[in-house]
Length: 179
Image (cartoon, rainbow, N blue to C red; front, side):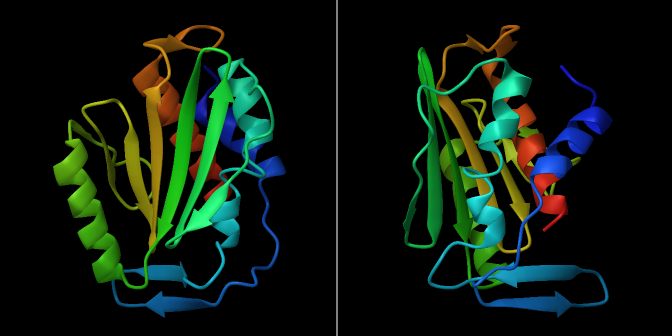
């Protein structure tokens, strides 16, 4: 696997976002600064999970998708399935209207999917699930990397499914840091 520094540099070079047509606000408190986007269309950072990141994921995992992923937007959730010859990985971003709603959604996923390990080095908190998925948060966006449809080891070189989820999460957050 590439070092985190090299990985971040590679992803940031291709993941820069442009201006968003989605309404956004910046929230500042004594403890946090957040950039909230919530509107009728996906935010620029949500779009990154399919558009900009697809070109970054393939070289890191050593496997290309069968075809360009096709995303969907429904109920403030942007979903992007990555279909490979031997399985499917699904990324989704849920955008919520408030920090309280975001925290409640994270808690519901934690309860439903199980929390086996905290992810403290990416985003504003997250966890790994019983199935090896990752769930992480940035502002009012929750990113889920669902690797249940992949074989136990995946990629070239073969990597444990849970490591694939963490690597893809790191790639997406490298894109988002530029958001």
